Amino acid sequence: MIAVVVHGGAGDIAAERHRRAADGCAVAAAAGFAVLAAGGRALDAVQAAVRVLEDDPEFNAGTGAALTRDGTVELDAAIMDGAGRAVGAIAAVPDLRAPIELARAVLDDGEHVLLAGPAAWRFAAEHGIVPVPTATLITERARARWQAESERRAGAPGRSATVEGGTVGAVAIDVHGHVAAATSTGGTSYKRAGRVGDTPLPGCGTWADDAGGAASATGDGEAIIRATLCRAMVDRLASGEDPDLAATAVLAELARCGGRGGVIAVDRRGGVVVAHSSVTMAFAAVVDDGAGPCRAAGVSTTGTCLTALLAT
Ligand code: ASP
Image 1 (tube, rainbow, N blue to C red):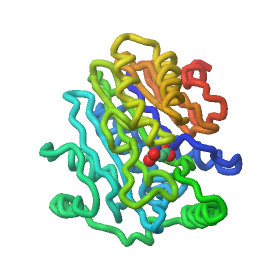
Image 2 (cartoon, protein in one colour):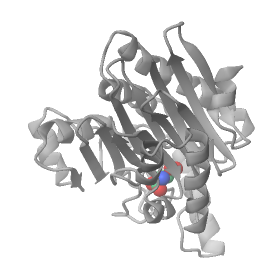
Image 3 (cartoon, rainbow, N blue to C red):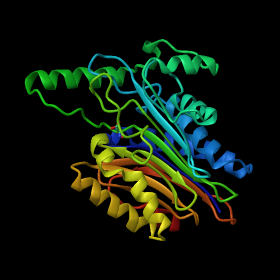
Image 4 (tube, rainbow, N blue to C red):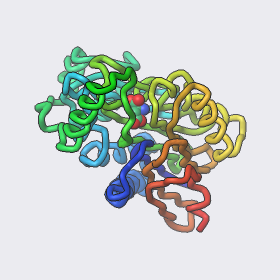
């Protein structure tokens, strides 16, 4: 059994964008599946899938990332190998076209788990990563979103930044039974500069452990952190809980922490789930239990889990 599941963020995607979001997720899942089908590692598969979405301007990661209150771009990403819990993450780093590649370099280097802020560029440069001009990461849609948010706040100042959807993530299980997870985001729209969300925090937005499975979360980051959502999800899978029930339980816990969002996961037996309490969640999956690949992609508006879709 090999499987990859991808998400393109929990949020409230307008109906006219559903097709583009679903197609983007499908392309990313295909990229991840190609790695798995060639006998490659789950770790490389989730990285390949997330890289596709970081370059797709539809999504809030890499190109197309949400802007901070200052109009800047600060990127969060994490990647985790379920074999040995190796993890690499970066937080609030500017000018990265491919945040997941820097997170992967942190994982491979192994000295630290999480590097934050512009100083992470020293490490990036040592690993041959070159900065891109901030302007190349900013799309018209991200700028318009920033403008609308700044006008909304001028009328009714509010505290919390808003989740618009578009964070990206992937989970996979490879032919050797190893799992991995990766997540990448520009964070919440109109966040304070320096704000770090759940995405790069191991156990919160990203977690993988061969003992249970792998999970990637999206949605209200502060609440996901308080719920340590992905660690809770994988611990439930490790105890043998059905993936759909585990997802329902962690989303209920997220609600208790005051947030809405979504989670994707694979368990060590190749069970897969996509679940959300947000209005929409873009996703795609390719699962092959030996009888050939079974594919699903879409923008869910029902919170329904993937299992049913793959069974049809
Ligand atoms: N969880 C992300 C964050 O809070 C946002 C998202 O998933 O859309 O940074």
